Length: 259
Image (cartoon, rainbow, N blue to C red; front, side):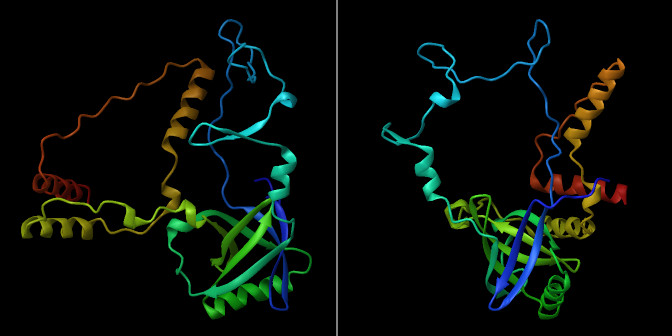
């Protein structure tokens, strides 16, 4: 495996405590990426900006950025105006306060980052020990690559992580959703539902869950590269016309058989 490279450096601080750290991406893009080719000669094609009135290619230096309002007005902006609104560059990761663990629900989680020590690691590991001993997580804010973030400083298996959070305007309040409606389960259906849930209790094993579509795409690409015929999946018929009681009975029978 290639060594992971730090993507950014910062300093966690609260009161007089300062802990130099490095940020490492905790997730990576594993999507299969394709190139568009010209159908006739299979040469890669390139995208251009085109004026829809004249069909002429517009060079990037001749473009302007604008915001289209609800009424259709065009508010023009220039790069200097947008640049002036960016937050001040900083390496500080400011701890706003400390919370009990799991106080932030998962709707707010955005992107995880591993933290590693920068320079002398003594302060870094002392911080990890303190978070473990106090059983808390920190609420933090920082500026990285011209964007401001709010996040949670947490421990994962004893190792500090920084989890960026969505901003308040990005999270849809559950109160805006219509509650689920429908006839309540009778006692027999409720009993079967409880049996089914108990029989399906399991531990979360993340290594068992893969991007199956990506794996099928890679398998298809490898087969086409070798010139082998592709296997076409056979569609499975679905069950139709079942009520909730029948569906629960079928599910219980299938779980019992597999057990």
